Length: 92
Length: 272
Image (cartoon, rainbow over all chains, first blue to last red; front, side):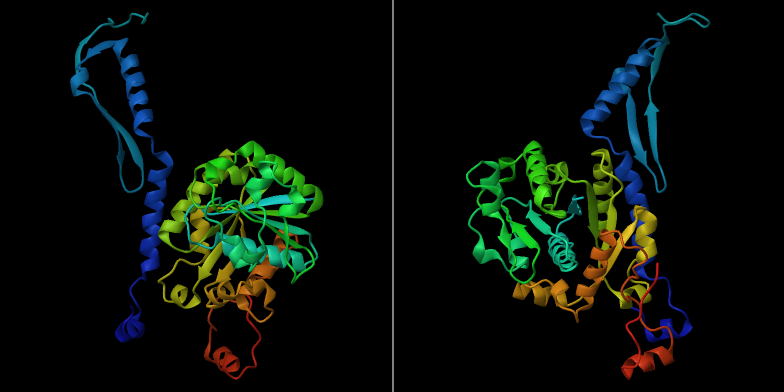
């Protein structure tokens, strides 16, 4: 609601700007969302690729979509036990 | 050339059925031969909005299951020459029909009609898939609210994934006073987010409730601003260019306000 003084001295921004700002964030998130099973599949494939080069601690792997205000970011924390490929060699 | 248009929204309660009924009436009044199809199986309502609920004998599922001929299930609206309703079944569920059957039904209807309008159920499941199966294009109905715009965005994505052309947008329940106070998203706000062409703006009005009570869509009423909004949508749907949107803004100065108050002003129109 806008008060008499708001009208007199210029109202603060109405709720529509809030609606629009929330929508923009919401749609970014909606559009890049993965289902839990898609997420599991992606995680498994990423680890498969990493496994060609290194041995990882699968128990402590953390790969997820992180939602920030203006973007969605794929973050991963993958503890490596040892590298299985030597520098300069080509993976099998 | 005949065309099948699905009226959809994702979210329920934003005015799909009202839009289907009014667009049907308005197109029929332009001399087009129109059939409106209620695809909301199990929760039919288009019959009630059109005031034709007492004349239903057969329904869409009867036709698809071959229990009657297509023409037997079509109900003719007596108020205008060219409008027919194909009602949904009330006692069946959405799985009684599949996309291939809907495609066949729409193809059969297109032989006899200029426009086949499909009233899509809310949601994105079977009923939605059935509704878009036979459609040539889609009209998405949205109200200027966060939840409705969000669902519309989802639906636009699904319509495009189904390889239909870019859908057109109807902004429904527009409140000029709230927009002016900055408490409702305006046309440009909604278009900036959804980024599809606008085919109509319908002001929020008590007319819609009164016409639903009576079973007589506002598009029949020449004095109704909502009716006028839908008649203009119908003109745009038939391909007419540069049809102005109905007045949805308050008068911009005291003189305009005064003229309107004295009944001198014409209904203002907002171009573009």
